[in-house]
Amino acid sequence: MTHPVSGCHDIVPPPSLQDWLRASGLARSDALALLREFAGVSHAALLAHPEAALAPRTLARLERAAARVRAGEPLAYVVGWREFFGLRLQVGPHVLVPRPETELLVEFAVLRLDPQRSAEVLDLGTGSGAVAIALALQRPQARVHASDVSAQALRQARANARRLLPRQRPGGALHWHQGDWLRALPAAAGPFDLLLANPPYVAAADPHLLALRFEPTLALVGRRADSDGLGEIRELIAQAAPRLRAGGWLALEHGWDQAAAVRALLRRAGLSEVHSLRDLAGIQRVSAARRPPPGDACH
Ligand code: GLN
Image 1 (tube, protein in one colour):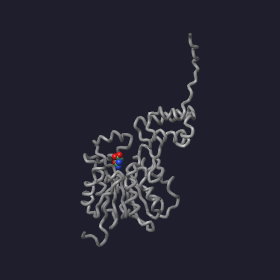
Image 2 (image 1 turned 120 degrees about the horizontal axis):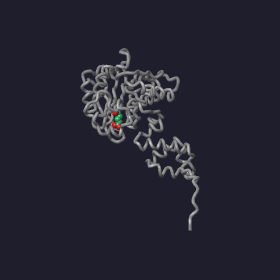
Image 3 (image 1 turned 120 degrees about the vertical axis):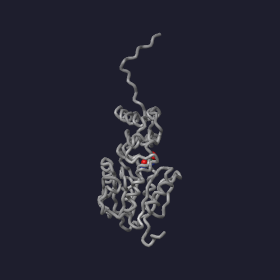
Image 4 (image 1 turned 60 degrees about the vertical axis):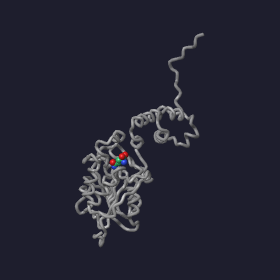
C-alpha cells in the first residue's frame, strides 16, 4: 500500500514554550531569562502554559539571542542589563558586567559614610557606573564623583545615572570625569573621604581571559599590563594615596590571589589600618586602608 504523498505545503507547527526551552541547548536559568526578555513570558506563565505556541517573530528573536549565549557572550550583554545592589544597570560591550562580589565595595563605603553628613567620594574606573550609582542612592548626602578612561563607558554610566537616580539629590548630581585614574580630575578636586575602585587586575597572559573575551580588555587587563596583573593597581594606589583626606579611606577590589600584594602596596604608600574583606565565596576580594587621621601620625 502506498502512502499518500504529502503536499509540499505541510505546515510545521510552531514550537511550544516547553519545546523551545528543551531544544535551546542553554542552561535553564539562561533560557528562562531569554523567554522573559524576548518573549515576555515569565516563569509563572511558562509553568501555567508550557504548551503555548511561540509566534514566528518571537521565535526568531529568541533564536538570535540564544545563538549569542551559546557562543559564550555574557547573558547581561544579550539582554542588555544586569542587576547590581538591587539596581538594573544597563550594560553593553564597552563596560565590564557588574559582578556580585563588587557589591562588597559598596557595602564597605556605606559603612564608612555617615548618612547625615556630606562627604567627597570618587569611584575610579566606574564602567557602567554600578558602584557610584549604588552608593549615591544609599548615601544621598555624599558628593559623588566617577571617572573612567573610556568615553564610551562614561556614556553608559551617565545614562544609568539618569535612569536610576532621582533628579534632585541632597548631595547634588554625580560628577563625571574622563581620564587616567585621578588625573581625570582637576588638581583642586578633593581631598576625598573615600576613594573606591574595581580596577583592571587580570594578568595579560591569564588563561581565564578566554572565558572573558566578550568583555573589554581595557577593564580587565588595563593599559599597564603586568605579569602579576597589578600594573594598574600600583599606579592607582600611587595616584590615590596623596588625594585622601586625613582619615579618608581607599578601598579596591582585586583578584583572588592578590590580597597580600595589594596590602603591601597600601602600606608602602603610607596608609594605615590596612585590611582585606572577604566576598561571599570566602575570598579576600577587597583591600582597604586609610590615611592616618589627624593626631595619629606616629602609629
Ligand atoms: N572579577 C573579574 C573576573 O575575573 C575581573 C574584574 C576586573 O578585572 N576588575 O572575572
